[in-house]
Image (cartoon, rainbow over all chains, first blue to last red; front, side):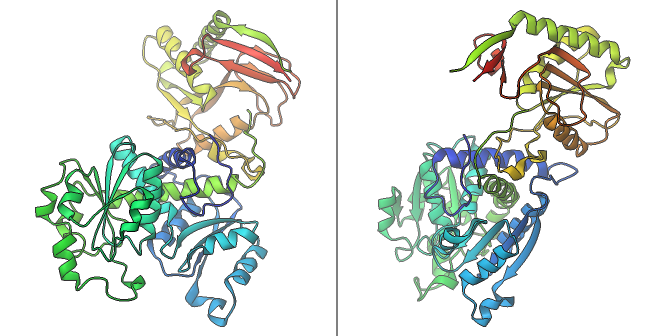
Length: 314
Length: 178
């Protein structure tokens, strides 16, 4: 085992061993968050930049807190308050940040491949915090971490991802991670949002929600991405809710130990009934806690992955 | 071509641990104040063995923990990604005598990191250090309280400690020259 990457750009290019390395490392960092003193000096003196060109609250805060718990200094950079509004290109913005000796740049951007683009000319580490509808690697890592923690394994589990797959970077990253770790993935939602082409990735696609959830060990619900849909992909939220929303009646069809996951933010009453979001099988808030541990692990690993590998001896 | 020399065999390792355990017992009058913490990963197995021997000497169980120091290392900026192992200290170290256990004492950096890491868990009354092998070449003012064997080495040489708990066929300590 060892991590040799300076960047975390996507899940697609990771090996199963690299994914396991992140999850193992995250377990140690989760324990740090449970101590009285929740901070370790692993990134002391390092500068981490949150370059969020697309709005985000929870991911940005999670990365910010992760960096602070590693004793790094954090700069938050949002599109609204930046020179991007004055016409500066993304490349120039990133090079300016690097000129300030930023060690790690965490980027969220509405364009697919923006983190990959930056990583080609930056010496700083680049971490993808979501690029368009392409990937959101740390979300997939925290989801697999949560599944592994709750179920003790990934391989052989039936995972159903329900909702807006087409516009979801969370879905794509999760599909890659789950398939690489040996889970069976079922996708379900309105046919306009769950194209059959996903079968080529190795997933099962169905439009029958009862069938999709019946044998699932994990049900991962996704939010409808209003902001990414160019035209209406289904008639109304009410109809989406009645056809695909997870309600009490549908929950009764699932395995009694099936876990309910959601990357947030949840739309109560649309993809999930309010009382299900708060029930004992929902691990939605644990995902948030685990997200912090996973992001600490990612920042720790990419920082170490920049140079020649040499495992320190006593 | 690497050349290996046997430094300690299985029974010598066990004799050294038994002696260290008796020295720990001799040094610490209040046995209930002593806790044993192994440094990941080489010190954990040795800490388990020491705690078992001490339990026999004192007639009561000795609290046992493990400590990973990779988040506190001072060489992280040299771009080393160590494997992070779990830290498990299921007791309060404040006011206790902590015996840190490691397999090999070399430059002293791991022990410094371990003392820093321990600070985050409380304020021990005192910290003592037990190592199976002291191979010299200290870069910090750190000295072991209990040593299994002093082994003069060259920097380029390597000490390899194999223990059956970690999947070795038999316990041994070897010196490797490359």
